[in-house]
Length: 265
Length: 252
Image (cartoon, rainbow over all chains, first blue to last red):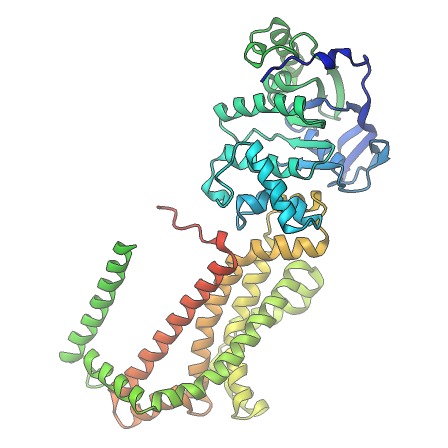
C-alpha cells in the first residue's frame, strides 16, 4: 500500500481537535498521579503518550475512556464532556482482555453484542474486521489457541468493529513479540491512513512512538505533566520501509531519549 | 484418546484384580471377592431391590443437591459481589463446613423428625458450603481487565454479571459443584445410616447385620459408580455451557 497522502499535506496547519484534556488532575489518596494536565488530540491523527513508567500515561488514557473519574478538570470528545464510557471511544487493552470462553467471532462481536446489535448483523460486521486484521479462518478458535500477536489482533478487531471515532490503545503491542510488533506498527500506519479515526496510543517504546505517531506527547512523572509535544513532519509520508533510516526519525528518537534518561531508575 | 482409554481400563483391571485377590486370600472374613460382589449386584439389580432402594435414596439426594446448587450459587454470588451479604452469610457456611455433621444429626432429628426433611438437610449441610465458598471466591477473583473491557464497551451492570462475572467464575463454580455433589452423596448415605435405614443405606445396614457382605459391598460399589457417572455428566454439562473452559492439559 502507498504511504503517500497528498491530501494530508493540504490540511490546515492547526487541525481540528477530536479530544481535548483540560487541566485534568488525578489523585490516589495523597498521591498525585496527574496534575493540571492539558493536551489536545487532533482529529484523524495518531497521538502517542510516551513517558517513563509511573508517569500516569495509562491513568490518563483510562480517564479519557471514562473508566476512571478525574479528580479535577475536564475531558471533551468532539466538544462533549466525558462522564463515563461512551460509544465515541473504543479501547484496546494491554493484556488483550479477551473472553477465554468465547470464540474469536464472539469476542470481536462482543462490543456490538453489548450495544444490542442483532446477532446476524454483528457477526457480519465482526467477520469483516476479522478479515481486515488478517485472522480469516480463525473465527471459531478460542483465545488460548492463538498466539499473543493474534490475540491482540482480536482485541483490535473488537475495537474497530464498534466503529468509534476515537481509538484508545493502552500499550497494545507490549505483550507481543518483536517481529509481530513491527508488523503491527506498519499496520497501524495503514489504519490511521484508511480509517477516519483519532488514535490515542500509550507506549513506553520511544522508537514505536516516533514510528507510528503524527504527534508525540512526552509525559514526565512526579507530578505528571506534558513536558513536550513533538510533531514529526518529514518522514510521515515516506514508505514504511524507509522511516527507520530517516535522519529526522533518528534525531527525534535521540532527542526524546536524552530528555527521558534522567527519569529512568 | 485411544491411549487414555487403555490407561483407564488398565487402572480398573488393576484395582478390581487386587480386590479379587484380597477377597480370595481372604484378608478378612467380612471382605468378599470382586466376583461375588458383582454377582450380588447383578442379583439385586435383576430382582428390582436395588432399583427400589435408589428410588428412596435419590429423593433426599436430588432434592438436596438441587437446593444446594441453586441456593449455593445464588448465595455465593451475593457474597462475592457484596460486602454486606458476606458479613451476613459467610460465617454460617464456614461454621457449616467445619461442623462435625454426625454430631449434628440428633439435633436435626429433634427439629425435623426422621423423614425426608432431615435427610435433605443433611445433604444440604454437606454439599452447600463448598458450593457457596467456591462461588464467592471465584466471583471475587474476576479479572479486573475483563470487567473494565466490558464497561468500556458500554456494558450495563447486568451485562457485566451475566456476560463476564459468571462465565469467568464458571470453572471454579463447577469445581465447587463437583465437590458439592460428591459431598452430597456422602450426606445422603450418612443420613440413611444415621437417621432411618432406607434405600441403599438400608441394604448396607441390613446385609451387614445378616453377614451378607457381598450384597453390602455391591451396594457401596453401586453408589460409587453412580457418583462417578453423575460427576462425569456434570463435566459434560460444563463443556456444553462453557465450551472455552475446556482448555485441555498443560502437557498437551
